[in-house]
Image (cartoon, rainbow, N blue to C red; front, side, top):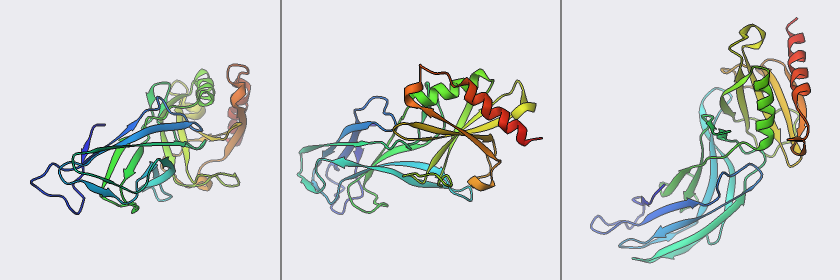
Length: 259
């Protein structure tokens, strides 16, 4: 993203070069459930500064139950050092790493941007609203399981048309994250069948439970949305087993609900 000048420090002086920060993400195409790495580069400028508590958080913008957008913490990353001084005219490099949760939202599907906002925020103080911070947008790619299942929906005429993050838990499901991602898939060639569907993946190390229902973009409470049907899909099945029967079965069950 490039170096960002730090103007929120107490000892900033207008006649001296301000300190700078830049967060480098070195992991290419990070995936949910996998490690993300990088380093924070801090330059002392003309006066130097103190890092009270270096912390890096993966955050996502999600919809609350009333439709308002809010920032949700996804995971905090580990850093090599937390508290230290950056002397004038010097540069400090601090490595960081961490594992993205399996439930982490994704921003891209097969190169297609999904309209989901996930970022890495670097703060030099503990306070979440600290003005001294660096912001980098994260590009998190969909795992092969998502691609395989959604490609099967495409074979049935339903293609991905954006995504939405919801700040809530899926009822009666064991989850580490109070956040789930909806993939909207629509079928413009046959709108009378189901014009648009919502597909949700609840993923873990084994695979995912896939939830399918009629779309209701303006409804944000799980229980207030249309009835849902689900089927399991495992990571090891990708490339070995087709998901066509399960997808068609879910669509058939949804059709029965309309009778």
